[in-house]
Figure 1 (cartoon, rainbow, N blue to C red):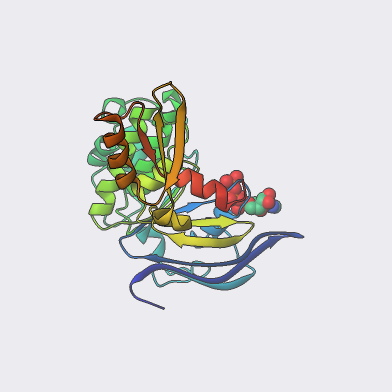
Figure 2: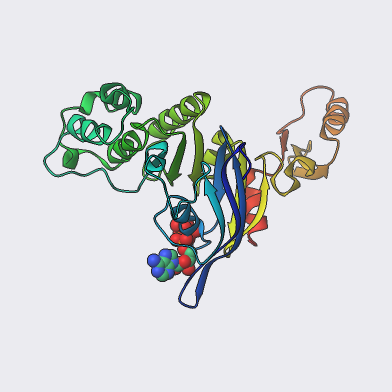
Length: 281
Ligand code: ATP
């Protein structure tokens, strides 16, 4: 297996009875990369990720995660991998500090629990019982538990679901920080803006197959897409045209209007536009 790859998957298949959840997945995630797995509900993302995490058995295919087959993990493999599960963050009467310290005890080289709590923005809640946390605060605790072992590779399954806009931004900062520190991150998300902001590359999975892997700006040949230029004519009608050379068109319009072009906008397909087209909407 390639040393440069944190995750390498070939021909992965998994069925639940007659339902083929993962038909034939190939995937390569480089070390240090932030990789986002996108796809509609039921596409096979969680099944794939849970096989990579060692939580599910596969029917066929080759899988290597940090050089190890997750179906036969060695003793130290689990401590090299961080997993942010949905909804671990409730531990009855324990407070945030106690839970993070407890999890830190599972690792030989854990990070300082107080530092981790600050890092996920729960500093003010260190002594709060976990059952009193809000939904977004519980997700932050999930993240704290995923990173306290200083993982080389971090799995994040829909990490910002339920976050308010400010919490999402703070979370994105944290992910950028972890990535800058060398952590490889595999993320599943339904938020295309999140994928665009965080991911070095995205993979689109539909009906159990990877249909494309690309950088967010190149997915679906987005970088070659025509731009849409819109403006308002002197009698107030909005006019719109597609152009491969929008700068020249805008210059021409500026000449025509002798300066400012009323209501001018220049847009290109968003990641969401190309994604929806790819999955057939
Ligand atoms: P979502 O975006 O909704 O989380 P997903 O891409 O993560 O979807 P999976 O959870 O991997 O999709 O599901 C893929 C398919 O496998 C679905 O048809 C689902 O119903 C089925 N499936 C998943 N887990 C099980 C299970 N434990 N038993 C039976 N079928 C399952």
